Figure (cartoon, rainbow, N blue to C red):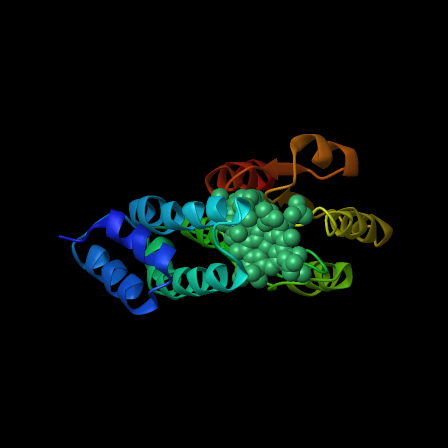
Length: 208
Ligand code: B1M
């Protein structure tokens, strides 16, 4: 039987091949995709984050773990999506300009797809103009912006300003480790979510 604790461990070690094989095994055994995500992948990455914070591991180790998580997520993503229903709305998501962190953003995108949103992933280092373009060209109703660095957070405010300047009415949801509800209120974002699961609830309420 697939062992989710072992999955968390191999994410911590950065063992891509085993992370992928345990994820496949868990899917084949019929484990709920969200359980695999929460108790295996996210649990492992949380440990890596805590160790990085305490300087117990450094950037190369973190990168190796992040890569293992990304590979396993590629296997898990279709399963999360399959659990979804009719598209609830169209959303474009990206990591804010200047910021290259994408693990949390990818999780949020996956959860939103799983919940039934049509998601356009713009990747990392997304300039305000790119969000504007997507709203104009693809009829996106909601944009999601992720930031992991305090230094890149102002890019969220710049994006909101760019939307206002263009007279666009798409809603904006923000999130990421340094982001707070207070900051969202301050910059005029329509929604803030502290984690991927609540991002789904907020996104649903914003397109309702
Ligand atoms: Co970076 N990094 N990093 N890093 N890194 C942090 C963020 C940091 C807190 C580490 C630390 O010092 N303790 C720190 C930021 C300090 C600050 O500004 N407050 C930091 C730093 C300083 C840096 C560099 C500057 C390091 C350097 O080069 N000196 C550099 C910056 C590069 C750049 O972006 N320009 C850098 C680089 C990197 C790596 C490339 C090595 C790697 C990123 C790999 C990748 O993403 N592909 C990396 C990583 C992995 C981390 C940590 C360890 C883990 C981040 C992560 O993936 N967490 C992180 C330390 C930490 O968080 N403890 C750290 C797991 C992820 C699931 O959580 O992203 O928070 P998170 O997402 C959550 C929620 O926040 C929320 O939902 C997610 C799931 O529940 N959420 C949203 C996220 N986005 C959302 C959007 C929403 C809603 C919710 O709506 C749209």
